Image 1 (cartoon, rainbow, N blue to C red):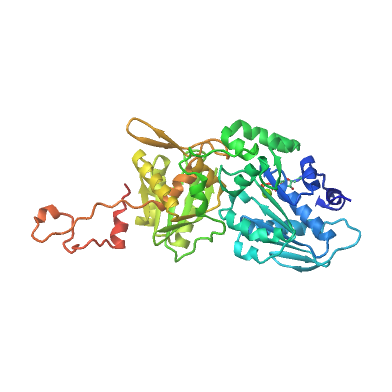
Image 2: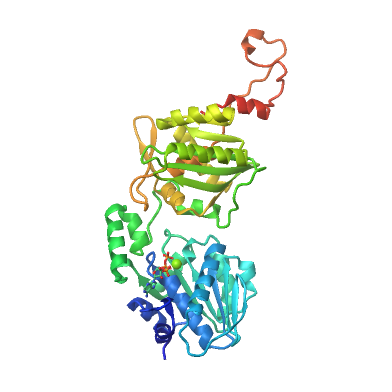
Length: 454
Ligand SMILES: Nc1ncnc2c1ncn2[C@@H]1O[C@H](COP(=O)(O)OP(=O)(O)OP(=O)(O)O)[C@@H](O)[C@H]1O
Ligand SMILES: [Mg+2]
């Protein structure tokens, strides 16, 4: 019996709902290559099929060690939970017992084990696995280290399956696919674009995306094309090393800054909560409101301010923002700071953000909306000025609210050039300056009360 038949005969998607494999899933399962590479569109069922395959092998082959490597703790846990769920609905006549279950692994009574870990080369290195699966390889920042950590297992006779969506013409995944197409490595390549998944609801959903999405984005997400990204001001290469898969939530006691972008449509608002530590910024939480009344939003913000006691709350004071800013300011005082959204100011904020990424002084969570809005942001040149406009993103249409909320929370405060007090200087020229300011010291209190952004 083939692995594909085993899966269809004994596994269920949900109770009483047997699995019927897609044709490309079956083709993939029937390949006996030790080196498999899958270039895939979103949501075509690859994580599922490898989880099924892994479980089938674990049940059939005693003492087999199977290792999953994912791009984050969360994904690693999701795969293992998925395996556990399929296991609980098995239609085998004879019960298979689990000897040990942890958050990272399952051991079955035949001695086979499935281990699922995030992409930490140090932990992976020590595991001698017979089968290794790497999920979303293209989005791993440490792709090179992961490959070298896994190669020893493979050289001991194991097999490796690497699968991912494309993510820019960069990185190891891109290289492996390119080499495989040119027959320069041992990997057998499976390319699964959206047209191959015949499920009617999938076809309908992606068909609709095709109407809305900019062609390049669609090409990357659904047509398996590696898109050249030199045009983006925030290319993936500079954002990648700054993504933190396991960012912890903001807590009182941290030096927190909130950036609040009040949306102009559909009552949409984005709040970004960033911790400032030394000269680095940690984006700890992003909250989006869609179609929620402004009063509810203000109540939520009020609670956040009370609970987290942020150092500042920077508010976009443009359009609808003015009224909301005034309301917040009245309630919470000088902590609430208006930010002007002039072309010049926006330009400086974006440049500042780009430098933070380049210098790796910002850490962001893997938030798809934030990353795609940054990547799509468009720079338009007018007569003597630069304008930043939202590009189309895969949450359909033109949005940039995640971008501005973030830039506000990390903007560097503009300061007057510091003037020294010189002895004997005409007093009138020093109006407004405290004579005590002989040095360039500005206390936190002074900074707070000035509240001026470019
Ligand atoms: N043969 C199948 N029949 C019906 N549903 C399926 C089949 N294979 C996968 N699915 C369903 O399709 C959905 C997407 O599956 P999965 O998450 O495995 O895809 P993926 O390609 O890994 O997606 P992503 O791009 O989000 O990583 C899930 O809800 C899964 O249950
Ligand atoms: Mg997946």
